[in-house]
Image 1 (cartoon, protein in one colour):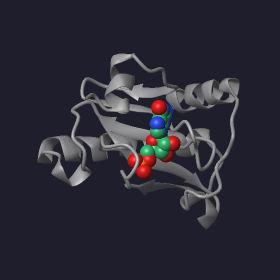
Image 2 (cartoon, protein in one colour):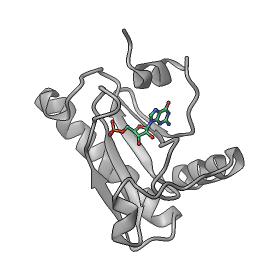
Image 3 (tube, protein in one colour):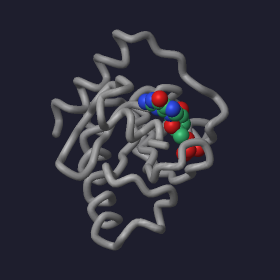
Image 4 (cartoon, helix red, strand yellow):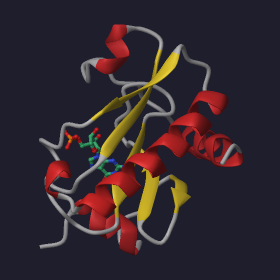
Length: 129
Ligand code: 5GP
């Protein structure tokens, strides 16, 4: 069965898109730790990030780097942190999280955002790419 992220890639499930290339997609996490929390994924569906082939893995890192630089320009924060977990969605992804304190990295305190805020943040990040 296709992963929820493959359904996002195909457009079956909507997302707040930040960036897209032929091989990668970045979109806002629906349950963010902080404003601007973004997920970067390869379009190739592979569960564990370290099972990706070398080219796709390195491409994902470079794509994530570019998106992180744009997030830092668009979202006021101390820095952008990068985390890989993957316990919830079995489709390799990188979390890029604007950090102001250690709490933002903990996946405990979630930030509730309205549709308009998601749209505004996604557009702001995209504008710096
Ligand atoms: P992980 O697999 O790394 O533990 O977490 C998966 C992440 O994907 C979570 O932060 C969760 O909020 C996010 N997520 C799960 N389902 C969706 C979805 O349908 N849309 C979006 N944008 N994010 C999702």
